[in-house]
Length: 225
Image 1 (tube, rainbow, N blue to C red):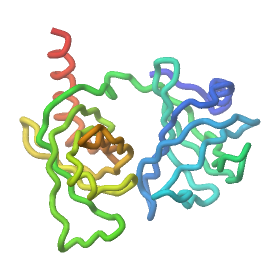
Image 2 (tube, rainbow, N blue to C red):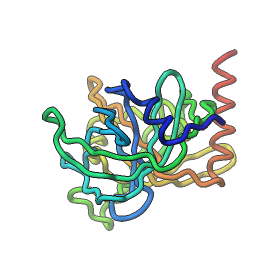
Image 3 (cartoon, rainbow, N blue to C red):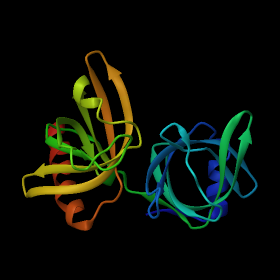
């Protein structure tokens, strides 16, 4: 695994405006996964488009540490960043962060997304109008999956139960058994009479990573034959 010091990572990111990134808040009230992109690099700071939470700017306190993952030039890197400040930049709300750990290059085989047909289920944990006593599992067949999340094509009536950034409990049936992961709605795109939806996993316990990783590798090998 290759690594870069914070200074090397800043130099590496310089000039990569527009590159998509993902921020992971692993604790607290706003725990979850938030997509963003690079807006600027100045000095020891990286300017990211301010993540959103249900259409509003995500509340983030100064000095809070977040995990950042960025995919660029065919490689995936992850590092820890500390929030420095927020503010507008060329009319765009920007969150300025500073890398505080080495950036590690992650082996891509662990993040391969493969097509699959799994009878997944989703239970909404929060969201506008959410009532735990009346919520029910929503069933959908997956289109693809990785260790980072799962994508499904959901009929219109069912998709209306979910909004972007809603937290969910994901039920994932694999050959070795049924596993449960918490996740968040990170993508919802209209496709004629259905919605293409993406759910990002918030965490990947080792007990789930091993069987899911084996399933992904099996699907990847099958696709090459």
